Length: 312
Image (tube, rainbow, N blue to C red):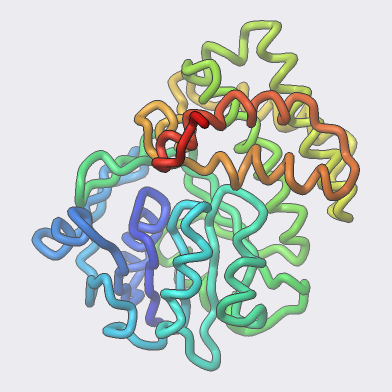
């Protein structure tokens, strides 16, 4: 199986390394210092689940050099998906599948608009990892897991083949015929944690135990659930409690990737997480006062990180 990892950051790079370890032919689309480091010495993964080194069959910043593949793993940040979707077109053949692993709920639609919805599946992953340095990914927490499936719920041959390749590399992976519910269930967790972490500037273990902040966390989770229901995505009655229980099980030092980006003054996934909730909720007439506040509080910093004017 030929796989192209488009965006070999913490998520794409980790799973690319595992796919290669399982026997897949993995090529990588990267750029800048990360690209140079991978060319020079491969992509190193230092992981609590076991270290690995990905030596791609080809690493490039020009997807046309790779050509059509069986699967594209889209590992860029959520705010980069629209640009990536246009750039990955040379990787798309008649039967190519595209697996998005972004935080958020927009990626599948954005990719489908660019490369054809028939190529795109839905996907979600759970992993705590970050790029430690060019060519080095550090996986620090959470048991890496992928759930994916056809957007229309119809079984096709391509997903079981990718499932087998992931499992051959030691990845905990499963298929779902209700992938929209899975993606929104993940969003219930990652969106509030990212926003509250970025606003409080503290690791998860500190703000989840402060009663006032925990109430904000629970309210934000409830807002996402209400939005999902308004969009026709079924989520269980105990979704808020289950999400809080998941948050309580995570390592106390956990920091979401969006929080890392905000703290470092880099462009973040704010518009694709809290911003997406605000945008979609307004369209549906759903009240999201906690998200309105969190998004507004983080917006000036996001504009500054993107070089946008913050004063008249």
